Length: 122
Image (cartoon, rainbow, N blue to C red; front, side, top):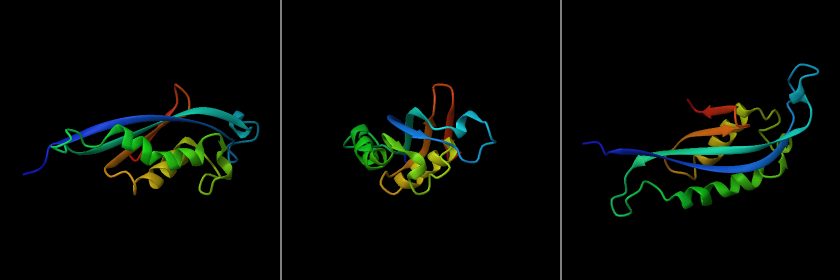
């Protein structure tokens, strides 16, 4: 008998600067600029009967803090693995850096702006 599955989401934010080195000459993203990123972490798993949740939201925030600290108020291009910090590369980098510490991490959603979003993995 399979356990009932739930999904929770925790949104965190960080500020960072970057530029995209591989865009065509003259592209606006080739210039240094910054974003107020929103990062949503989606966790899936069974309900813990005693606690009544799959994971405490504050635990997600605590477990994500080391990654947020690496990104917040930083120049992303200087971080190993983020030399070309597109939203796609950033979402994958965050997922890979958090999947070990956040049990049940299913997906990372990065909002670079209020209208531009990337999900990894899909």
